[in-house]
Every structure is written in C-alpha cells, then in structure tokens.
Length: 287
Ligand code: HMG
Ligand code: MG
Image (cartoon, rainbow, N blue to C red; front, side, top):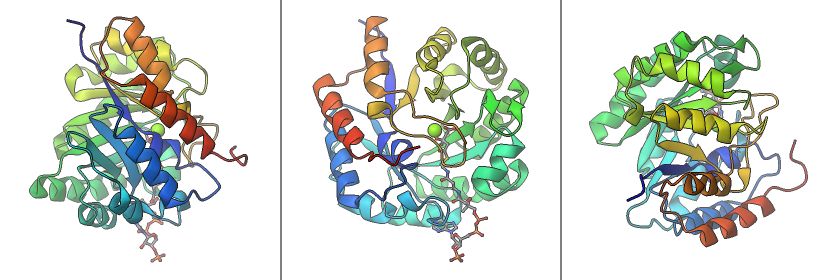
C-alpha cells in the first residue's frame, strides 16, 4: 500500500484573497463546490478578517452560506480575532485557523500587532473554539524569510509554533509566505520546530515564488511531514507580503507526490477543471 499524504486545498482563500478585482461570491461558491468533488478532506474556503484589510474576503458569510457541503469534507476559515471567530461560528465553519508571524515586521504588516499582541489576541479565539468543539489549526508565517526583516531564525518559528500548539491547535502549518525558502533553510527550520512538535502535527505551506516549492516539499517529506497546503491553479499571494506569488499548485503537488509513490486520493480530472476555473477568476489586474 502506498503511503498516504494529504493536500489541504487553499485556493478559495489563499488563492483568491490577493485578487484586486472583487470576485462575485457566486463564482467563489462554484469553485468550492467543484473542489468538494475532488476528494479533499479539508478545504480552506474564506477568511473572517477585516474587510478594510482584505476586501476580497468581505463576502465570507455569504460564501459559507452558499456552498454545498459534501460529506467527509471539512470547510475551514481564517479567524484573526474574536470578531472573526463569531462570524466563523455563525457560518458553521468546520474548523478555524489562527495565524501568527515568526517575524515582527510581517506581524505588524499583516496583523497590525506585535507578535506578543497577536498571540494575546488569538488565545481567546482558540479557547472559544475549543469550548465549542471546533478544531483549531495554526499558521506560522515567514518561516524562512521575511520581506521586512530578512532571514527568519528557526528558533523564532519553533517558539511561535509551540505557542500555537499550547493554545490547542491540532496542527501547525508552516508558511513560506514569500516563497524564498530553500531545501536547506526549510530543513533547518524544521529541525528546530521538530524539537517542539512531532511531524504528524505539522504541515508545509509553501508559496512557489522562486519555483522551489516542490524541492521544499521533498525536504519536508524527508523530515516526516505528510500534509501540504496548495491551491488549484497555483493562485494566490498574501496582500501584506510584497512579492509573494501563489501557493504551489495543487495539480503540481499531486503529480509530484504520486510520482514519488505517495497516495493523495484526489481526482485529477476534477482538479484540472477546478484549476482552469480558478485561473479564469483571476482577471488581468493581478500583480
Ligand atoms: P486593526 O485595524 O488593528 O483592527 O486590524 P481593529 O480591531 O482596530 O478593527 C478595525 C476595523 O475592522 C473595525 O471596523 C473592526 O470592526 C473591523 P470599524 O470600527 O473601523 O468600522 N474588524 C473586522 N471586521 C470583520 N471581521 C473581523 C474584523 N476585525 C476587525 N474579523 C486585524 C487588525 C487583525 C483585524 C487586521 O489586521 C486583519 O484583518 N488582518 C488580516 C490580514 C489577512 O487576512 N492577511 C492574509 C491572510 S494571512 C496569510 O495569507 C498567510 C497564510 O497564508 C500563511 C502564509 O502563507 O504564511 C495563512
Ligand atoms: Mg499563504
């Protein structure tokens, strides 16, 4: 039996959040519904963040209300604070994700807070979700390189990952937000994080800006990680990370993992259809 890996689909959230043109909620719903037929266990649908910060995600409640939930699929959303959590809960999110930065520069740009302030703000979100029985995932951003502060010390990533774990996150996704990681820096970062958490509680979230995401996935597989975040069509970027390109494309990761002998359980015909649809949502104004 081939070993199982999981691809966590990010397209509707990380893939679309950076689009300048406001994409109609109906199109986002159609994308999620398509992805629901592909065999994913988890799909990140949207973000309950401030619409002043990320206007594209301003229709989060509408999108969550419009999707057709397939059995066996968990629909995840981002929640940066209690206001976001209340929205997510009302929208019956299957899981919520809290997100913090391993660098002060990116924390300020993305969350308008120091790392310490952001962790303080996230603790009640995690506690409320736990009390409500909603699984909480954690993200650490800029795990190797920060667009503001330069290279990120692996110890900083380990510290934030441990803080999110201590809040009750069942899994920590490690974000190479600007896609500048290299197998050596990913490996060094994982070396530090694995002193705090086992590999089965970690996921790799690699943007493909420099075309090294698959190499970084290989370095992570060697460290025991078996969950990878990706977006159909390779869409995306973070609005507060200058120069960030898309998440590594789901179809690319799936083909790569299959060639390496892993089973991902995805229907590639559906993935290709969803990737084409997602690319069509992109418009020409993309930077
Ligand atoms: P702030 O401006 O300091 O917050 O932003 P505030 O509490 O002062 O609120 C400002 C306004 O926003 C208020 O409205 C709030 O009500 C409203 P006003 O009173 O002025 O009319 N507001 C909200 N509205 C709806 N939902 C909410 C919410 N919160 C406040 N949840 C804040 C602080 C954290 C809110 C802001 O910085 C924010 O929303 N940041 C999120 C940025 C973001 O979404 N970035 C992209 C996702 S992270 C990412 O892509 C990385 C990842 O992919 C991993 C990786 O690649 O590294 C996950
Ligand atoms: Mg990302």
